[in-house]
Figure 1 (cartoon, rainbow, N blue to C red):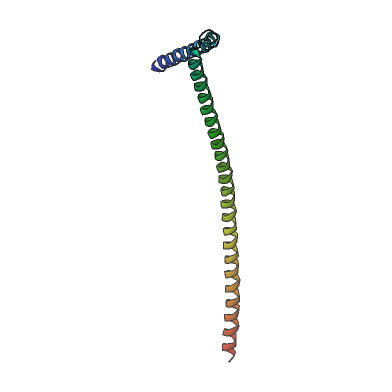
Figure 2 (cartoon, rainbow, N blue to C red):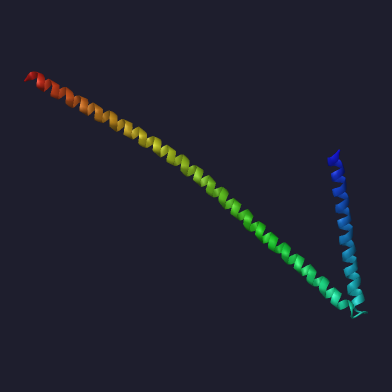
Length: 126
């Protein structure tokens, strides 16, 4: 129930905001027309134009920032994917190295066992 009331208030505020934007546009048009008749309105019109330029510049800066942020997040995502791939590759290489170590140990034990067998046969013969 509270959500519905909140949504209604938000909708009303948005509608009011739109009405005020339209009113400001109409007032600006009137100011432009009245400027011709009243030199005092020129300063007000200039202030309004400066304000509009300022708002547009701020929005452009925000867009540029958000585009950079979006790009940065994309780069991080790609880097993380590469890191994940490198970690998997590194783990696979570690497993291969451990297998090779085990194989070499087994081969070494076989050689030592064979050596011991030969030495024990030689000692028996003596």
